[in-house]
Image 1 (cartoon, helix red, strand yellow):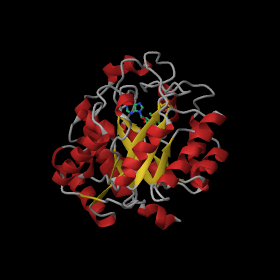
Image 2 (tube, helix red, strand yellow):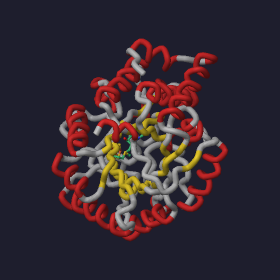
Image 3 (spheres, rainbow, N blue to C red):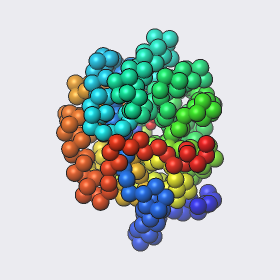
Image 4 (tube, rainbow, N blue to C red):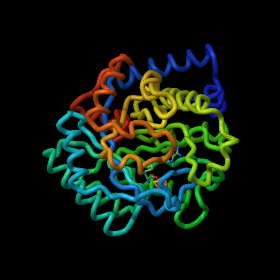
Length: 349
Ligand code: SAM
Ligand code: SF4
């Protein structure tokens, strides 16, 4: 559906009956275009070592309170095996951002090992930040086929309010990296944080139009949540309430579903940090992907991007059982054993 900026802003602002009608329309669009199935991507947060200093993130390089970890290959492979044996069909390998040759080689070797242990069956999404064109190509050739790289905000000014303005953090490089991913052949996912200090409805409307223009295949976006040990915490007095950020995030998902009916949209974990049923609510208004956490429990405390991150003490088995029940209650079906690739990707390629 074509929507201009003013129409998008109006939809993002809706409340009451108009909002109910927006959410109903986006749900119908989802059912018609991508169906009632929810696809699992087992999330493995394999390292919190990061060379970057994003001003909002709890595991930023400058946060000295964080105990850094790098999961062992065996632990990552066990989590992948759990995903495969439980018919999740896909995993997401996520980490802080490093670009050293050793890191690039390690991810490359993990990809090959995960492919091997699953007889090439597990789908692999990477979320390891900005890398060179060559690195993206190398990882693609070793078995990764989807990549998540949130633009965080498409407004340049806001981007530099939430990232240091230096060579390590460059808006242009981030946009360029998304281009590299696309030309390499990945299913490309991006997204933004919603409810950031200084963020306006205009910015969010521009974000959605950017996704459409970039012709993305997948989106993961969720509410911004403050973390005490980050520089952005000083602006917490500017934030909307958590409930308002939550509602706005659902509106963003709904409008995106109308704008790009056949993409995959993830129900972000940050939604669950505000409302225990947050991810299921996102499924009901347009999302169709969920990322159950498979990170070894011992490391979860140290991968706290924001406060009150949910499921810190649940193991993979518990997470799966809990999600299964919740999705069942939400009336959706789990696409066990299916990659659940973005329909948009198949149509554009
Ligand atoms: N390091 C990689 C990157 O930045 O692309 C991947 C891991 S990073 C932790 C994944 C996402 O976490 C980021 O894209 C960001 O949107 C989100 N995130 C970080 N801090 C957050 C916060 N305080 N509230 C909500 N989301 C946050
Ligand atoms: Fe590092 Fe990603 Fe956090 Fe930025 S958002 S500090 S790149 S882990």
